[in-house]
Length: 433
Image (cartoon, rainbow, N blue to C red; front, side, top):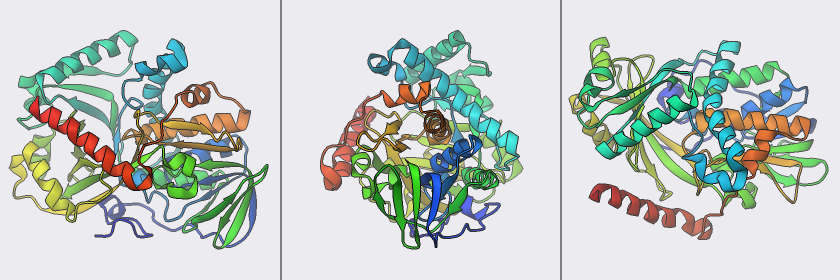
């Protein structure tokens, strides 16, 4: 299956999307206050934030809205931004770290608010469980639970002991406990980004699909050239993430595109679905090559994981992922797999998103590298971009952009193989205990 045609990949999400009516292709020269490149969560929500502040916006997407990770991901709406942010205190101070921790929670609330305010039908359900694979990991969840309680986290959270996991969370014998968070949840990501694109359009944003950018000419007015026309704008936003490629080499080397894969079963019976995941939570474990899974609105098990850094996709995704699913749910041995797909997520070296502006071209802004937390963090970064572009400054933008980011070594040819070797070492450590 070709995952990278101009149309949407053949996923469960594309098959169950509400509105795939295409937007036009750029075929004229236009002018706007801001040109946004990228039709995923970053670009679409930045366009919303800017349009709400009264700026004229043109959004260019090389393929279809939500074509990349925004329309293919696991649909898990989970609190947090990257990994432990306390290590960034030397760059942003204690106050900056506190801001990052608040943003990790408030970013989820931002997504929920946008869905409610605009009536976006994307199967939003609240409830998530972080799963421990070992007793040591469960001890870590206990510490996380205590920290959340101490910080005043407003949503229901509860620890689930090893002996209660099968009854309360997931009918599997591989886990050593869990932490349930009712302030996180899951949804249909493609329907969310498509709904948000219509919101942006309603605010006056001009959206063009199948309009790949061929060239960017920098200056006080940026010229963005496509095959059918050129957009001139005072400000440019790059929201391409793992698909930036060589459009801006100074940024593309700081994000490694990594493959992640999902399979979707046939619809399960009401009884079997309720047995597998009694409270319809989204779930994720803590292995290096983590498993994440949930039920769809029509009771399919969507099971994902197997993050690949090699740059090569499995030849048969279903054959590759099914054994992972059966380790967790051996009772699904006779269940049919109806959909299989993959996509690229943008990984940063420090697992923290990159938000900023180009030093040599200060009217060019960017956000990228969500490292698996894209559903909520894209929306938060779009908010920061909207604030900074409109007002000229933003406390949150300043905090996020103060975190330094290294360029992956090895150049284009060796980045992925070098990281793949490093991740293999971590997995061997995990297996050997």
